[in-house]
Image (cartoon, rainbow, N blue to C red; front, side):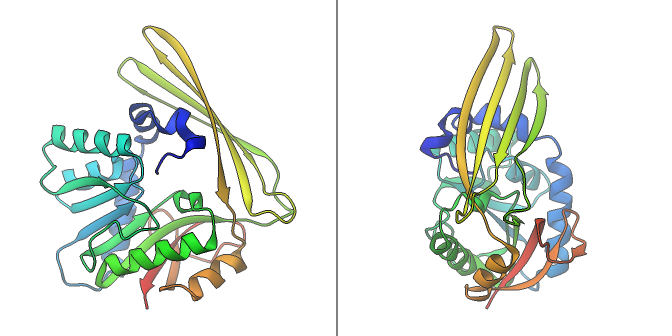
Length: 260
């Protein structure tokens, strides 16, 4: 995802972000490729796009599996880190990242058989208008028969309570622990507030990073109405391994979208 001014503490440090988020990526890519095989109708060789690619963890796994792929991210530090890692792995000939925004035509038109964006990254877009621009630009990037797998959690106003998650990971002599607190949107608001505390342990000691940001909320009705008036149409909703599920009333799903 791209860093904003509010996120500068954690998301500007690409290596810390990558250490924390990389575990489990290979299994996630298994699910993405299953979605590609099931839903893409194009006979072209697979070409995958990741909007808001962050540190490039998905691009690395895809590239090592021989899948041509591109990503873009608003944050130049993330993009630089992603491309450095791709070069180090020797897959920069088929996998790369570039600077670009989710609301602009950051990707080449008509090229990609499959695009994906997981774990609520699109909820960093601050309005329905920005989401509509993103869906339109992604639709233009897809080749005929291509699909977009978009992971998003819907909300149920008045039924949600503050919650907390804790993640940890280690790479070499660096350990990262992130505690994230979620404050649901208040009455009449579409903004969920997220507070992050990260502790990074190295041989030199422990440093702490605090940041906060806003995620836009969507009820099931709001989200389905937005898709219905967008440049995409809903094919179905799946879980992380590609099995079809009911449209969540409140919770996470991966929405398989196809351009109209």
